[in-house]
Image (cartoon, rainbow, N blue to C red; front, top):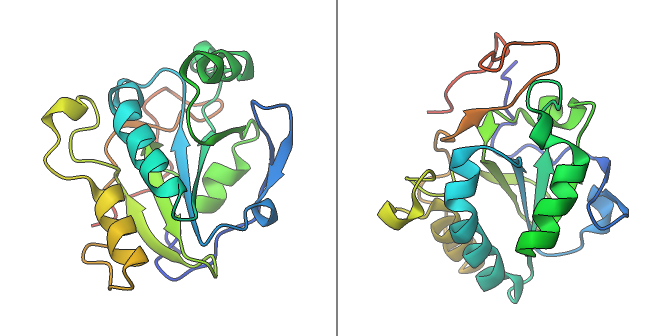
Length: 192
């Protein structure tokens, strides 16, 4: 069995605390399109692409697309990835997404989150239509030549087939409890 959710599979449920003080579950999201992505507080690839991700989330929000960021990183491996850091980060940046905490790391395992950031786009039926990177240069979005998030959402909302439904996420690996900072599960692998 593949580590990462496969195209056409259904979004796994979750029930996670958010930085807004509320618990959020999959069924709370009624939008036509849902973008779930694994992110964190410290990764240079996340920090370098925040502006691009924010711009894309804002652009498509008025087209019934919702972004949900999930931090599954272990605070034992990276203390700045704790929940208090998440709250500070949202208060400072006012990101246009819900920011949820997966302290047990079960949701990262269920979705197969490989890196930060790693994006999963689901249609109205919550079937996976894209997974991988957001942009081609997440560490420095000023050098971006490809915005896979924008392209995929544009194609999907126009009713077109997704031209490139799989890309490899680019970023730091998820920081797993009890493991070295660079450890990856044995069955984790490139998507393409």
